[in-house]
Length: 290
Image 1 (cartoon, rainbow, N blue to C red):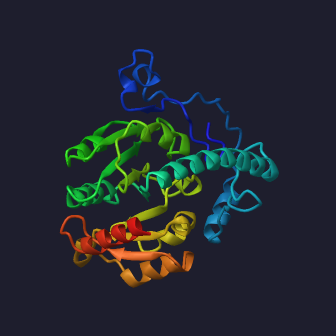
Image 2: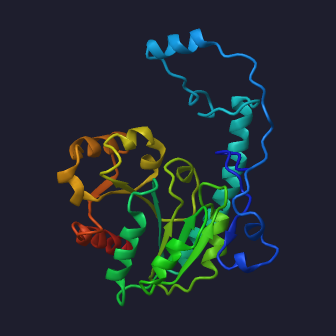
Image 3: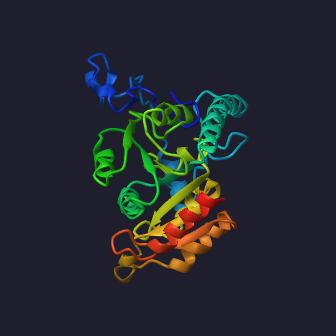
């Protein structure tokens, strides 16, 4: 179990392992985690209703650890988090050193599910074709669907399935990058699992996190998930072609992002119509030259 976010590590595999007859993925890809049965003895309706009517809230994000786990003190959770992230950060530094040695730009694309991240990536790869070497590490809980979409652009890609896990980590990236050809000066795109929480805390050795937010989600998303937007160098506001059909306040969204991260760069883009793609490609070229 991931001691940072509580996600399970079972059934993880890198594409190709599913052909292994002893793979956990083949035997039980969607098996639920064992849970201890609980007996409900009483429900205190009065306190719950009173809290709701008074507009109260339950906030488990307080304390040193900034989170809550039954049976663990804030200090213990903080110690566990430090130990896990310290190991991951050492592995991430190994990845970063390899990228730097090969003069490769590594980008970690993060978003919630349905932001249009894969469509944006496939359109980007098509425009980079024959100009810049590129490769993709594709992260999902299950299936190889997105990796197949990426390969259809002529780009080498490998699927990393996390099973019950909700994010990629530095070891997964190291294992995957050994299987991908990427020439010097190329770009390694890492498409993380759709999740705006856990990937924020895990350094993969990338140069930048790029947060993709679609206009179909909500202007206050950066305020609801501040750690991800604080960790990102660039925010791509995607699907702007849909703005005429939505009640979405662009300026409010940009202000929310800058409230969390005053240094964040923001580009408005539509992977479907191509609007803003030239600015995104120019940003990529600028990062390659740094």
